[in-house]
Image (cartoon, rainbow, N blue to C red; front, side, top):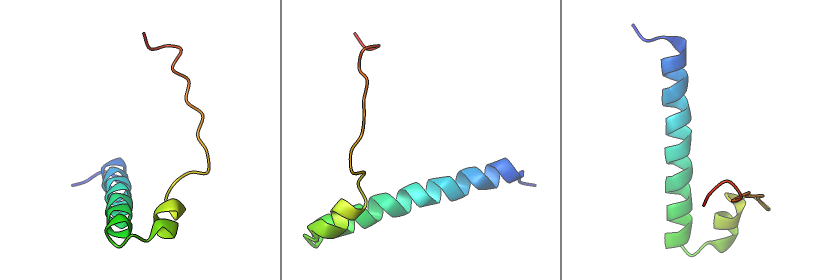
Length: 51
């Protein structure tokens, strides 16, 4: 039988796939407002650990 964490992983993976498909469909439709709705307003990335 499946454990609860295994099912949670499947649900999380499905959500990621749904988001990728939604962004791809919005790009294909040239619906830039919808593409933007799937993106973060801003992000903060720290590359200081990578050399």
